[in-house]
Length: 66
Image (cartoon, rainbow, N blue to C red; front, side):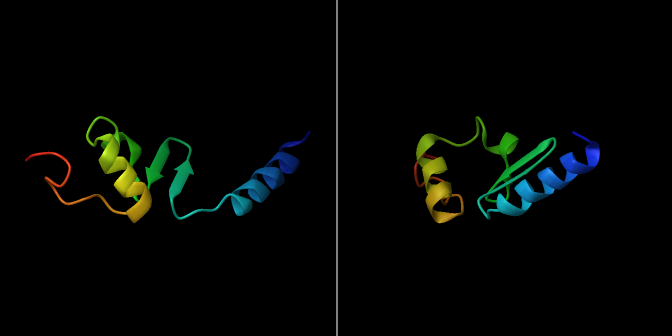
C-alpha cells in the first residue's frame, strides 16, 4: 500500500467518524470540549455521567461537597 492510498483511507475514516462528543487528534483527546487529562482524576463518576448526558459539567457541590 502506498502512502497516497493510506492518506485517502484515513481521510475517509475521518469524514465518517465525526462527532460533537469527542474530538481525537494525535496527542489530543477532548471530550465535550474538555481535555481528557483535565477530567481524569478531577471529576467523579456521577459528574462524568452528567457531562456525557448534559454536555456540561455540573455546578460545583452538586455531587460533592465543596
